[in-house]
Image (cartoon, rainbow, N blue to C red; front, side, top):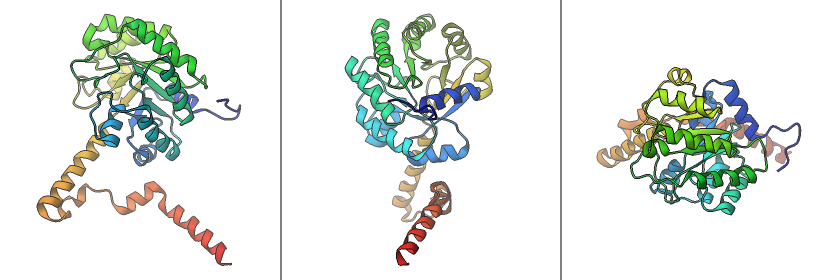
Length: 298
């Protein structure tokens, strides 16, 4: 896909955000509306979680069940609704070399700015769960080379995620990350990091931007933005917090309606109609309709 000289690609926008906001806070957005909310709040980049797609769009566990097309459906909806660059979780790439190449091209066409691909086996698990199995580093290097070669936009960001820390220890995880950078990735995502100092060691060793995934109920403590900045982290990902809060609120609403016969007690949990309309820019749409109908009547 050739970019016009006066047209900034999504990948360029993501790279600029990484350079300009130190560290860049990336908001997990599970659908188009939450993407609009995050943009209105001031975030400069968004994230689509593979586990989030599995749970929220498909109602299945994050165990390699979802497909590229499942994720692309949500990618297209989000990129249509917001101008923010989107980082996408593509798991292990959904197959061999030709599948990975197709995934990269499809993500670019769908408007994504960046992806991360991981070094687990195809039947992957959540990065914060036990029982993860990794492919040899050489196989992951081949995945990366395929992904880099498939790019139709040189500014599109390819990030490598390594899950080696939990299984193989810090030294092996860093060695893997260095090999992945050597194969051409732009950034590194070290999964399930447990200590701030480990981020500093990754950053010093790889020489490219690194991402910290600050997810709730996992192996990584909820480090603050300032703590992560001091450790050399370039990108802070908040992958799942918003949809976890949404889901908890939804469950309370369902339980109240079923148990109490009314939603009165849980109305304070809800977004108002006025706020919904504000974030959708609803009244601007109505105004446009009024203008169109007025023209038809003349």
